[in-house]
Length: 65
View (cartoon, rainbow, N blue to C red):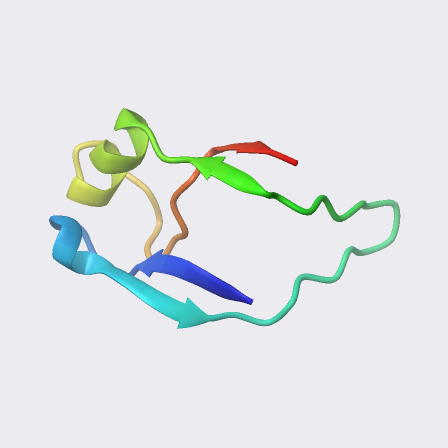
């Protein structure tokens, strides 16, 4: 699977496409296929370092599928 990952705070130049392993649900979990993920102001705030997150992370807190 491909994802955009952010390794450190900064501008749009920190966005990097990376291959990631396919997720596997654990016991009593489900896997939801996300067709579209919204990237909103919170994601840009997190990317810039204005809102703290643990790096690296994949932006896109909203999804539809």
